[in-house]
Picture 1 (cartoon, rainbow, N blue to C red):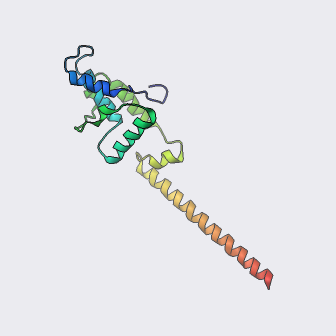
Picture 2 (spheres, rainbow, N blue to C red):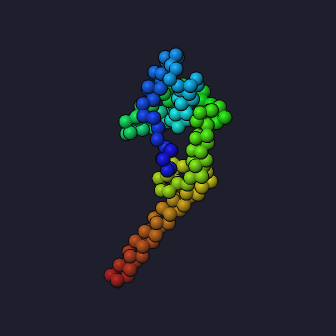
Picture 3 (cartoon, one colour):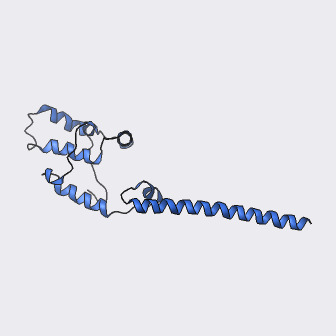
Length: 150
């Protein structure tokens, strides 16, 4: 993690191939499995939209996220991650503390539903107010124009 950015291992297909070997002594036992599961925490495949998002990330940043495309139940308890648990906990804490900075981020951030509903209400009320203001201004201009013609 560099600042507020997370850097991932780009070639996760290599992790998948090492997992398929089953006899690699390069890494400690369970390390590669935990690495694959940790990557799947960030790039889930449960829905069609998340799969599309993962594919867009792969194409945009030229990364290989094959390891995240296995369909199995994902363990989300951090105590089951002996190698990456502390780092995942820090990332989780920072994510929970972060606030959206741009309107687009506010729109897509659904962690706090009441804030999101408040944003939608504010946007709708602004649009309705703008429409009625324009209608009022146009009718005022038309009234003045008709009065000046008489």
